[in-house]
Image 1: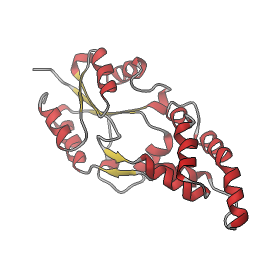
Image 2: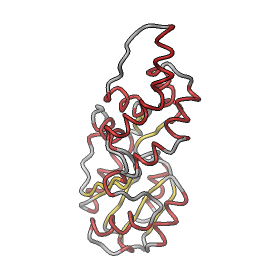
Image 3: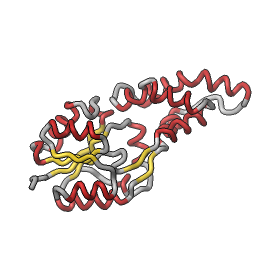
Image 4: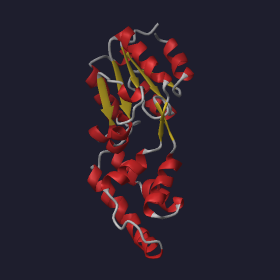
Length: 215
């Protein structure tokens, strides 16, 4: 049996579900553009990845997105007059209102904390997503982790080895004492390459089954 003393949980698809198409729909509505145009500006351009990697702050991200989509927005305003300016927070909320909670995971995380004393969050995410989730009145959004490691804060993203090194340093344990739950196989493989125990699963019953193998 593994001697697990700490569990890291991924955020997306483990603690909360997300739908990128909804983020694109929100942007399309906000800027009066097509969903395809919004998807290209947000994801196809690599802008969202740069934001999650910590290469851009909130203001820089919103400004670049507005700069890309603003010409289309102004053109649409000429035929459909309305608000001519878009607030930064509106942009950040538009890309973030795509999450729904996996409420059962709040109890799962707390159960692991009761057993081990500490739990952590290890996620590829951006400041806007994390802020929006923390503002929701969900049980999972109220969880307090002893260690929270976000890609946007450390300028490294899974499956890069550096983010796992930082996560291991943050919890202060050997790799064989750490269990990591993530929904992507490449992230799980990278964790195992660092000597961690790791399981690929989604939140809910799959996560419970994965934890039952070790705890």
